[in-house]
Image (cartoon, rainbow, N blue to C red):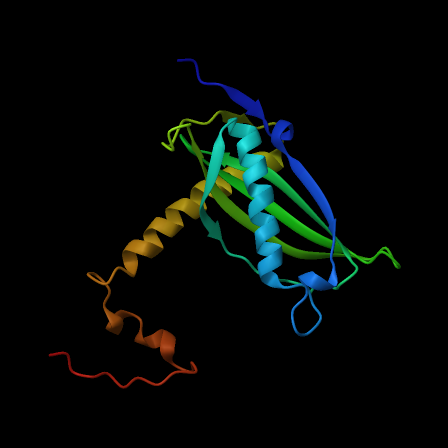
Length: 185
């Protein structure tokens, strides 16, 4: 089987949606859950377009809400494939809001969704690779590789079978915590 490769630009997705009062929380700002739902939808669309298969969300890496989004603003989300593995893809997302009256735009969020391509039987299926054409694309691809390695290291380091609290007690100095260890039976 010859491996197929695609240009990143061929699967990029951009959506813009008006934020309505029904999307807001009790403080009048757009509910974070609504934004996450839209982000998941655009990540799905981008990954499915690239893989030509149905895709599922495997993980979401770090969601920071940088600026609030107001009712009446336009929210634009951009999604792009940053990395392709054998059956998975990392979709980079950028969320911006625009005040319709002033034209002011704010960067509200950037995040990375790992999506897995599925065949008609629900089994993980190979996905096309990507053709890297710019320094920024190479940077995003390699950043995804490093993030994956760091994630595996972080997970193994804090596994309950190998974790030793005495190795980390110095991190608790000046923290907003108090230790009251109880003896285990």
